[in-house]
Structures are given as structure tokens and as C-alpha cells.
Length: 345
Image (cartoon, rainbow, N blue to C red; front, top):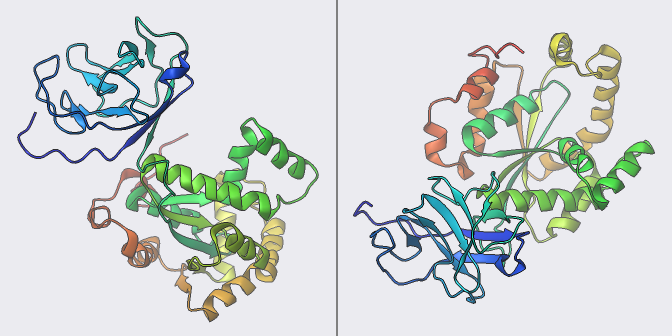
């Protein structure tokens, strides 16, 4: 292990669904005093065997740390309350794996638990989010620019439609409620959508540490905005809006060009006209409201993609890590900018 100071352990681990219910619970950064581990490694606060380590939040386990890494067995391990090991997974990952099934150890009972990593203490309120609303007509480039900001700048791109589709495909009461409205040909009410959105944003922030969000196509109406206030609090500052403007003729050209390969059933002239009329009637009044509050950033997206992206970066830079802004373009970013062809399907 290097002599350089180790960064403090600021992660929290949630263990759930274990065959031994006593194993389940919240694990917090270990406060075990420095000691020599089984492999001869000198531990330090929050670490064991050179990797991060955790104690049970309730302090009941006889073993400290109760979730740690074993150099001797090259595995992450979770202990029972009596200190005997119950579950393990062989790997050299820097953090306890969350994407693979753990194994039942000698003193464990199936099934092995699920492990979730929290970047913030789940017992405390979720840190505030940095939100930017993104609006624009069909074909204005919302998806492309949001995709670039996500792959290159670390922002999270959230689409209300995608969120509802994901929740609909999951099991449970929420999926059934969404299905009921969609099957009846009705829009899912804001009173259902906004709590789902808030919950998803909190889940992403807690499990990834990311708290910068681009909300694609929101708000589309005054009722959307009213429910935003009801859900996030009227005392919260109204987010800014990126409004992508593009001449109608250019939008038609883009949509018709996209129709050749997109597979979208609404990429045709009839649907485009209807979508554009709906956009003008329902969404432009919201854009005007944001303009009146000096919360609207207008961007002409008829320019080339690189020029538009540079403007987007400028307006997102306040909440973006400088290292991400200056890093070389990712492969996905190059494809979105048209600098590299997409791989053949």
C-alpha cells in the first residue's frame, strides 16, 4: 500500500435480501483503529487490507470491520453478528461488487444478499440537484446535445417518456398504474410522474454521486410546472431552461433524413406537422414564461453540431467538473458530433 494519504471512506453500503436477515442493514465507514490485518497489511481508519471497509451502522457485529476485503482469500466478505463470515465474492474490485451474485460462505444461508453502494448517507436528506430543463421543437437536437452532455460532461439525461416506459416494464403497483392510463389512451398525471422523477433523481444521486440533470422535454405545460413546485418545493429556485431554436424548414429536413434509419413511427410529415403544432400551442407559452423570468437560454441549433455543443458546454460549465470539460472526446461523443461513424448494426 502506498505511503500517500488515503482518501477518506465516504461511502455507505446497504445489504438486503440475505438468507440470514441479521446480515441485512446499513454499513458505515469503519472506525476500527489501525491494526495489522490477516495478510500483514497495516490497516487505517476506514480501510482494511488496503481497501475500503465498513462496520454495521447498529454496531452489533462482533467483527470490525464487518464488511471488508481479504487479501489472503482475494475476496470481499460480509460477517454475521457473531463475527463469523456469511457471504463472500472472489474478485479484486476496489469496491464491493453490486453487479454480480455473491456466494454463500461456511456460516451463511442462501440466498446471498443484494449490495447497494450509496455515495451519501441514506439516513440524511438527498443533496440538492442541479437541474436544467431542455426544450425545443421536434428535430431541434435535444437528444443529441443531452447525449453529449451525458457521455462527455457527466450530466444525467432524463426523459419523462423513457422514465415512464422503464417503470411500466417493471413489476409493482406503479407499473400497473402507468399501464392503466396508457391503455385508456390518457396521459399519466403529473401527480404520478413528478414523484417518480424525483425518486429517480434521488436514486441516481445516491448510487452514483451524480447530481447534475438535464430534463429532456420538460416542462411542456403550466400544469407540469405547477406540479414541479408541489413536488420539489415552492421555496426551491426555478431551474434554467435550454431552449433549442431551429427554423421549421431545417426541422423538416432533419426529421425526414432521420426517418430513413430511425424506425420511429412518428418520423413522417403528417406526424411532424401535428407535433410541431402541439409544440407551438402547449410549449411555447412555457418558453415565454421562462424568458420573462430571465431563466431561458436560447440556442440556435441550425448551426453545426460542434458550435452548438460548445455553447451548451459554456452554459453547463458552472456545475461541471473542469476535468470533464477538458478531457478528450469519448468515442460516443465523437459519433454524436458526426466525427466518427456509428458501428453497423
